[in-house]
Amino acid sequence: MKISIIGTGYVGLVQGAVMADFGAEVICMDVNKERIKDLNEDKIPIFEPGLKEVILKNKKAKRIEFTTDIKYAVEKSQVIFIAVGTPANEDGSADLEYVLQVAENIGKYINEYKVIVDKSTVPVGTGKQVSKIIEKELEKRGEKIEFDIVSNPEFLREGKALGDCQRPDRVVIGTDSVKAREIMKKVYDVLYINETPFLFTNLETAELIKYASNAFLAVKISFINEIALLAEKVGANTQEIARSMGMDGRISPKFLHCGPGYGGSCFPKDTKAIVSIGKKYGEDMYVIQAAIDANEKQKRKVIEKIEDKMQGVKGKTIGVLGLSFKPDTDDMRDAPSIDIIRGLVKLGAKIHAYCPEGMKEAKWRLEDCEKSIIYCDDEYSMANDVDGIVLMTEWNQFRGMDMKKIKDRMRDNFYFDLRNIHTKDKVVREIFKYYPVGQN
Image (cartoon, rainbow, N blue to C red):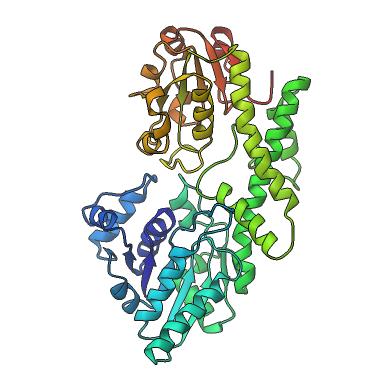
């Protein structure tokens, strides 16, 4: 089977690599000429563990190719995945500009029956909108060619995206077409044979499933963060609270980890989008809006805590460990570190920052603070002459740091562990003024 993936961001690139690894012939198309040039030169534009090896293996086997030619990608494939970005508009709604541009191009170049798959996270009704645009383009051409629209949302975790695509918890296929459903079974033949759970539903249900899933996880994170704020004031331990809650089969322990707030390419954007969808249809999403508000509050509370415990940060230097919104990714989109660093700089602090993968993107996202930030070569140079350290992202290498060496390089000894990775380390508690999240 020949498959085209339109868009080579996190979702498209991972999807294309795994589809090729499953045996399909894959065309990855993107309008970004520099990105396609890099991919053709074996340079992978994103950091995702294991992805480069899979791409290079399948390039060698001639199962994956990269192009900027949308006409070629449309004409040569039986199944076309739309995997372009859907960034948030100012009102929180999803910007469908790129999705609709792809739909228009498909309508211009479609030459025989195709299955068009919305892989991008899109609002309810987008599938039908894509269908209308393709039909409109066909009318301009004076042709009638059959096609079907499928919603096939992704559930990838950055840093673990390859494994999530190869071994998903479930595959959601939204379509009213029996023909398209059978073709999608063939697309995912490896997973279907391996008895991965498949959910076949209509377009609208599939489109809403992704938003509902991400919104629920965001609610869990905001919930435990609010419990953490209360726990600090009453003398309780949030880690133990979360552990007990997680033992309840109705709740589960996943995403009950307090911290500086959620970030990334999905949760902030998708929670705002589902609230926007609710408004469009006359339904207020009170719980999800509360999660959004709580997440913003959490970042403010972190800044207030640092300023309070350090008795002001003006003229002081603070080291930040980890900038990406989570470990094993270079993605800085809506990372809590951005707002927290900006808040500390606004209060007069200087920043020493180190992240294994996030600094390149951080430099342009935090360009407004560049005079106040020094980007360091490693965690130890980050500690030089700082008054306090904020561990923002729980990269594994930070768990094994020589904490005495870190302390010896510091001017003062404040340590704010926003991921609670050193809560059981007696040495850390002895040599630092140590402040975890959600406990004394």
